[in-house]
Image 1 (cartoon, rainbow, N blue to C red):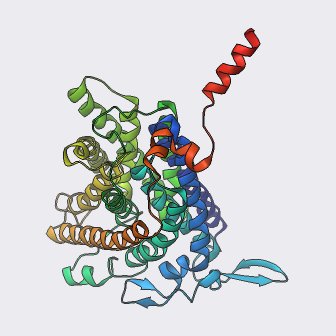
Image 2 (image 1 turned 180 degrees about the vertical axis):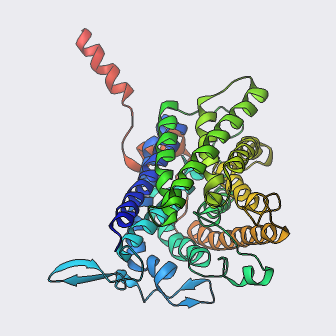
Image 3 (image 1 turned 120 degrees about the vertical axis):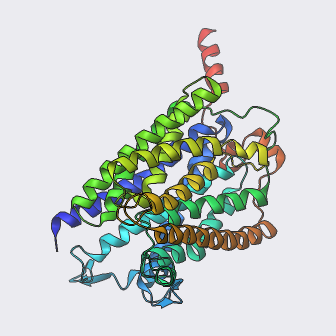
Length: 427
């Protein structure tokens, strides 16, 4: 065992875990005050339900089980992590593996990836869905969508660099840390759900403003910090690739923040804090699949392109009429798709503009399209089933009065109580 690699991967797992609370702040600040607790609770469920499902069978479907058609692994081989953990003298440790750090650490790292992926979906359905329905959705989606997608891309499956699609085209598909598995996957799921559950009351007819912009900025900075584990950790060792992924990740995020800001300034006359936070995240999303294969120049160019495109894309929901509350589709869908496809142009030695040919571009487009199709079909089945059984939405009165009070029985800010206390003291 290489203790340096083991330490780095445990650290990376912890950094990626932090990303879900980061998303909670990022999304929580964007919703209205009457819905912030519900948003934080949706993210808490993303952490907790995913941890249980991943321990039971998610890990086995994604990484441990015998591959079935290159689409998913059997859920029995690694059920309850029996392939990864062993007790020695009453103390649990890892089963010996062929890698240079214990398999138990890989379980931890991959658990956090599953958590953040399903946590991204929350932003699209803000202020209107039942907490109970969301918990059921998380369990089903991790089982039937995320775990198989991880298997297909990262465990020698259909969409991997050595999978059937790559072999047919003659170029290895590349997704370093989750352009397809995480961002395209979550964004497509988000779009499908919002089309099924419908718009918030007042969407498009009245202002729906963020209640706490500093929360949004805090969440974005936490995400940037956690992303070092997300991308640099995907080198699976304390090595030069990890170091470079840190550098390219930062360059792309910075470029996207600036390009989003310039785009916003031209369109509205302002550089907004919400725009800066969204631009950071968009750049992080875009570089995720490409962090190890684009040069510093192309990392900056990629980030700048993603910042402009995602900024423009976020306004489409008003023109097209779908209520993606916090722009999951615009930021993660467009950003993840752009980053995945741009490998076909910027990938070192394989991309059209970096010494390669057309094959890399073709394979990147195909794996993105397959990811979109798979996520769309599986999510639609799950979401329709839940709509027809337990139902997704709270009542209109509960939504208008505030989902925090309706679903959690609490308020984030007791303004009335505070005012009453002040008046009593004055009297």
